[in-house]
Image (cartoon, one colour):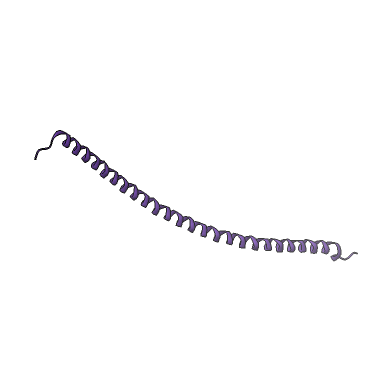
Length: 99
């Protein structure tokens, strides 16, 4: 069976379209692979951010606890210093007997 020139041209155009479709399918598959890779990377980064957030909250809690303790210690030191100074002044003025 012999093909005429018109049928041969038509078949060539169909083959070109099929080749373009195959290339398009390959491109779509590559794009899907890239998207899957980006999605897994996004999930990993989200987990890292969650871990950092948890660590930061723990640090904030510890800093708050230390800040509270230091505030109490600061007040105790000032009270002790004030008592020491007051006692020293009282001893100087009233502690020595007059001659």
